[in-house]
Amino acid sequence: MADGTAGHIATKPALGIDVRLAARNGTLTGHTSHLAHGFVQGNLVVLPKDLAGDFLRYCQLNPKPCPLIGISDPGSPHIPALGADLDIRTDIPRYRVWRHGALVDEPTDVADVWRDDLVSFVLGCSFTFEAALLDDGITLRHVACGANVAMYRTSISTQAAGTFQGPTVVSMRPLKAADAIRAIQITSRFPAMHGAPIHIGDPGLIGIRNIAVPDYGDPVDVHADEIPVFWACGVTPQAAIAAAKPDFAITHAPGAMLVTDRRNSEYAVF
Image 1: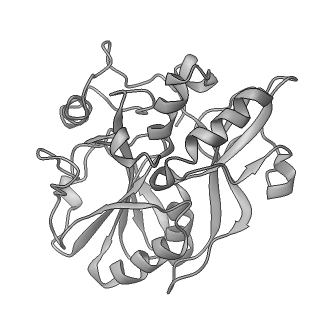
Image 2: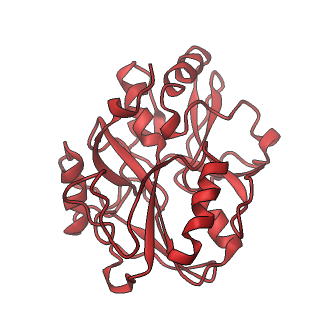
Image 3: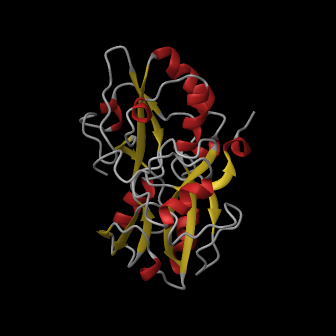
């Protein structure tokens, strides 16, 4: 996504339902980082029913990038466990539509392409644990700048399931050493939201050639006294979809998440 602030509304929504309604009525079309503080955000993958079993297995084999927190019945755009008034077709600020593994559109709703055989998967998101980091006094530069988090494809392969395979995508946050240590401790409490980082330090060791040029999201400077810290990211399935080439799929646009009615504290492990 280009401009990290584009599509945001003047007043930050306080509740998950507020974000969904803003997306539904078109007043929010950008990223959801730091919106509805304290409410769980999720990545979206929608696939035809005949591929749902393979993708479920893919999530089970790759719990760090693909921690499953919700699944719909075939054809249903609702997941009541995540929100009573939640419609997968309209409640994400921006979607991606895929055909045969190619990205063909980035609409603000997918009601016109919805099918009766579609199954929706919602995966945990690092925007959830960001709230815990901020509450602990850790500064996150992309949040302070109103930007989307920087995300990168890596050389770390996921475990294949059926036709689904591909690289692990990571999100990166630059932190001072003391904050990086604290961030490891805090995010370890949220295994359903990617948990602890999967890499710290030299990006080249995980196949990232230029940290200044993310594959998704917005670039963020890494200062001389900071360490880049990398978490597994729920954009990973989009690389798997590109490799699997299903006839049809829907995902969220990177950074534009489904904000639920579940509280972050429900997923914290103490």
